[in-house]
Amino acid sequence: MIRRRPVSCVVYLALLQLWAASAYGAGAHRGPASQSGLPAPISIYSHIPASTGSAANNQTTESLVVKHLAEVVRLKKAGVRFDYDLVDALWFLNSGFRMGPTAAWPNGPDPWIAKCRATRVLPGLRFGGNTLGSNQPATSLPPEWKASLSQNNRSLSLFEGGFLPGMIAAMQSWHDRGIRLFVFDSLDLTAATPAVAASLTADQIVERNSSALRDALAAFGTKNPDTVLLISTKTAGAHGELFNQSVDLNRLGGFEMVSAEDVKSSFVFLADPLRSMDIEADTRVRTVEQGGIPLAHVDSEGFAVDDAGDSGSHSLPVDWKAAFLLSMARGGWVNIVRGDLRSIQGEDARWMARVQKLFFDLQAQGGIHSFGGPPGIARDEQMKAYGFAAGTQHGSLFVVMNPSQDAVTLTLPLPEPSLLERISGRVQFRDAGFTPQLQGNAVTLGSGQLAVVGFGEYAAPAWDFGVQRGVMIPSEVQPLEADFESTAPGTIEARIDPPIEGVLRVVVLDRTWSGQTISNDEASAKNGEGAGSGIHLEVTQSGRPIPVRVAGDSPAIAGPSDSTSPWLVGEIDVNDLTPGMPVRVRVHSNFDVPSDLEGHAYAVVY
Image 1 (spheres, rainbow, N blue to C red):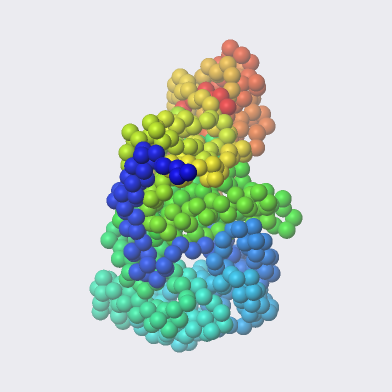
Image 2: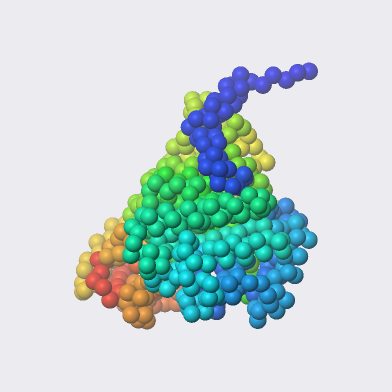
């Protein structure tokens, strides 16, 4: 018996095929990617810490690499894909990239390279480009490089002196020993010796550096076609604004990645600070995309698991699955995983492999793009819902986010919404708590909620990724009347009638910092490293101190709570309050600069 597919399904799939080729531009991003030497998306395990500090504190040692590589091999056996194992090569920069044992690498690089090859993971090295690190004095450089030094002694010209020829020669030596991935970052295309800097324009210097690097890498790639060359170029602003809005992604001779920068702090005011940072990362990526860079070329800093140390518990953050989904859904062709993988075991490892399999296919088809609320407004508490969408001839997939305090409804950009009366979508992943409501091509999300919605083939149960139990989204959030008044410089106070159930949420921000995103280090620097810099929250009822749980902290003891960031979200359990009596909320800014504090209150039910 021959089964006939319903006409509606045939029409739907045909529209999806047309949609994938037009609205999403199937293959539209594939062209620039393949032209730059990367024929398909890749997966990298990086031993380089996600947040770098001093070289002494972040040196990649041989023992640490061996420990992490064993975890990479374990996850590969569970189905997780790792194509390359990346190690920081800065530990031998001062020796002119020459190879040999060091205190951190007593056996040299050969045992690591051999272990990679034996486990079918290709070894890679990150070169720091042509700029010197904070712990790399110019006097320590090889003599033949000094003729390349720029006038500030912190970068090296790529078209003068011996630096670039020396680097290419070292790369060839590394390739001959088995290295198949080279990553370059911290490039300074304005570098020139003092004599040349005085005789050429800035644009001429950039062009000469670009041409020299492009020609050298093209020759290296022709000689070694089995090698991948990745070049990371930085963005200028805190939210991903580009140095040059007309970046030529084919100018440097390798697959060029535009970095959206490491996220250290956020202006997204949610009770879960990790979710806030995920949204901040999304904002930066989407800003770069809207600056004209295909998502395939955007480096979102990947996915990182904190290294808990040998005596740590190695527990994953509660929202790790959402963070990993987002790292894949942003569409970059270079997918990086960092950190301690020991906590990813059993079913978690298999879950990770399933997500990879899905998104590598979507990335390769080149149809991922962002939609929804505009990026670049992370400083506004009323952010709008947004998402990343992928369309193929088999269906469509949406990873959607609500960054606001309220439940919102987001319209998904389907090719023909009227067909949804007969062909429905399915929520394939969500945070716990609030249950997203899907009606046609409109999905309603709770405050701060992430969800994955599939249509067509991607609505099948095979792509059900479950519920993230560690994150609880409120079932209801309602604004409360809260008249915050200034009572002293840098201080606001309000008397609030608490809700009868759930928690009282207080959101405070310092509008002095509006328009910026600063890290805690930057905040401390602006405030002379003073203890207690940031926002100080105190809640009392009839003179009695009330405990406050501040975002990112464990429940506080009775008394004040602090945040070193220029915003704070605190929650008070109504069970700690006397019913029918107002609470007094006092907020003070300890920043040395003048403050413009703003407060809001909400009744929240989980």
